[in-house]
Amino acid sequence: MADYPITPVAFRNVMLQDSFWLPRLETNRTVTIPAVLQKCEDSGRVDNFRRAAGRLKGPYVGTMPFEDTDVYKAIEGASYSLTQRKDPALEARLDQLIELIAAAQEPDGYLYTNRTIDPAHVLPFAGPSRWSNLVMSHELYNCGHLYEAASAHFLATGKRTLLDVALRSAELVRTVFSPQGRHDMCGHQIVERGLARLYRITQDKRLLETARFLLEERGRHESRQQYVFADNPAYSQDHIPVRQQREAAGHAVRAAYMYCGMADVAALLPDDEYAAAIKAIWRDMVDSKLYLTGGIGARHKGEAFGEAFELPNLTAYAETCAGIGSALWNHRLFLLTGEPQYIDVLEQTVFNAVLAGVSLRGNEFFYVNPLESDGSFRFNHGSAGRQPWFEVSCCPTSLCRFLPSFPGLMYASTDAGVYVNLFAAGQADIKVGEARVRLVQETEYPWDGNVRITVHPERALSMKLFVRIPSWARNQIMGGRLYSFEQPSGTQPTLSVNGRKAEVPGSGYAVLDREWNDGDVVELSLPMPVRKVVADERVTDCRGKAAIMRGPLVYCVEGRDADESLDDLSLGKNGLEAVHMPDLLGGVVAVRGRAFTAVPYCTWANRGPGPMRVWLRNVG
Image (cartoon, rainbow, N blue to C red):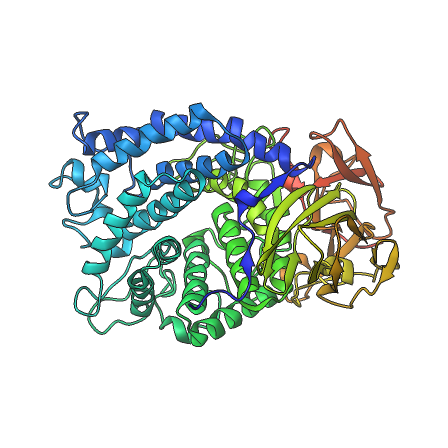
């Protein structure tokens, strides 16, 4: 059976015990998920299922037909969270929601509350009949989120309640969209990767064939009008067939979700042309369309990628959902190839573009993630700061499901060995061939670059341990040519096994191939000097400027932490020093320079809105 050549270690087999990620996951469990569930109630999203189930009178509540997905994403996030800590009250709440969703589903599997409530009075985006306005109806988009939530809930709890709902829906989609049926697809991708997740559970290859059919229809306009929005023919990546696409273009979230679906098809069917396309698109992105934070999507208009090197700071869009989509796409590219540059981009994206999207308290969010703020431009959908909810609240609900799934990105395996991709204290139970091994990580990453890994095989085990040496520790940034360190680091990583020095490669993974015994210890030291970063001269907004990085973290200066105007600050010959500040922003390693203190970008705007800069003048 075809599959990714590398298998991720499931989130339920990784338990975090660190001081960086575990508090964030706990905040997500105790604050973000309850807040999102309550907002789904308060905003009428859950009531729409009650109305569709005939348990409540009244019209559809909401302005968009895709608001069902916020409920699905909340269920997905809560399901992931249940694998990290038992919560009977939360599990019971999910059971009630799922029973309601099942009751709202029509007999043939159709599930779209906006139409079921009152087919004669739907929102304009929905279209007058089923599947009649797929460019904007989001009917299949809703299905994709349902399928992902159902997969997560089944894997977390073993219950089939939501999975059966999803499979009834998928059977309808499979029969409607086929070579013998409808020849079109959803304007907003995600159903493709949702179908792939259902396939993993059911092994029903027809689901994969439907995913590929929907992808193949994109860019083919023989029997329908091209999907165009915001004057952008590439908005829904419908400008040319997906096999021919070689540039990151259009709506950034739709693009990232599509690239994930293409990766799944490339691995599971398999399809080498799909793999070649997404690798070329990735290269275009990292060389010309990727923010230093890992954010993607330069333009507010169309929430889209811009042209090559079009990366404005103040007006950056860099939607939180796009960052999450990019991280998941990069993870799939790694599983497909085993190449470390994809994890380099994933790491920088998650630590910066994604984590910035949620406040430290867990109940306020960024939809948009600029690299500069003047404190007054209302970049965040009407606000210059964070918001507790949005009319379109895809980002809060995406965050609540992504964060508890983070442990599933850390490790991977083959029959030959284990990949250690990301660093966080905790332990993982991993299958290697017919054997099992437990890895225990001790580290204060990302504040400190020392990592200790203790290996506990069930018996003496010959295998390879692949330990990633991050690109930032090798004088590179995310495997692309957009950014570089102003000066090479004077210190290099070191590695040892049981106290004996091991070779550290110039790039990629350190491969430790040996017989492992219980209690063997690997020690990795990643020096973390404060570094100045410069951008390609073709990025006009960053000319004559520099940014600050330490380890995987991008730093910024907020107006409240500067003794002079941010316009006047210069990194020039400014001495930069890393300083642990336990009372600042929950405890961070800050960077102190003359006349300012820089904080990790992922923590900005937690003390209210105000001026902020990632890129500062670099003169003097």
